[in-house]
Image (tube, rainbow, N blue to C red; front, side, top):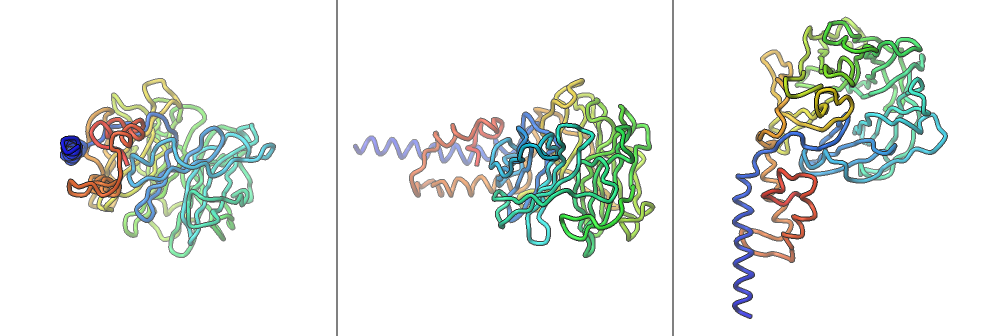
Length: 379
């Protein structure tokens, strides 16, 4: 019995040693961080990342302590649309936002006919973002035109809805509009056009496309990062609007960059529809985006991430997409999280604190992050 116990202790200590050594080996990640995904939306609150997505005509939220762990088709089913409604089909690009003390999910949907796509909103009933949601209705201005990819800009004490829509009733061009809101569920003002496909890099594919507007702030500076050109083409990319005046409802107060701020390379195709977040320790900025899996892949996409910085004028500097299957440093603070998780699971400074099977934990969690789990049990 003594020999058996010594053997078990030796095995445990070996596991601990290899685990902590693996921190050094696992300090990098590789794109794609998820093999499938569209329009990735991630938000961080209270040190937890929440990934909101649509799959099988339903809305889901996955939560995790790391960016790469959150961006997976896992988690909780939070809403299923009822049958026979104007919003029962083709649910696109949901966004989870925390506004004035409540969780909201904004999404586009239709009745089976794309011409009837409109924006809708759900409101959470508790502080838990993966809990119950109540359908609050359509989010529309007085024109009630085709609309997708809606998000909310909080600026000063006001709320503004920003989305992609048609000018008229036909699918010839998508523009970016903004309107004032009286509450997180209601538009109270007329829509204002702030971006239309203007430059050659925005006008590849028909219909013409400006879509997927996302808000990003740097101190007092406000930006709308949007997707341009056909999402089904090999030339999808990101453009930028910067608020250079004080009134978001004045079109002339938005300045558009003359060139894309994030575009494909020889090996990376159609990076687009991004969201933005901070590293676990809040010292770094990261962009999460989808790309086509290969040239000609269209809407067959995966999910990727990249650290970005800011230039001297306060503009985001995204550079170019990271090559796939090439190691890059993990977001700052991630390794410290792995140490905490191992501690929580029962190993502290080489001594067992409670019952924990490392091998079973590893086997049950490694399938969705093979590049991390090769050496380290995923949280």
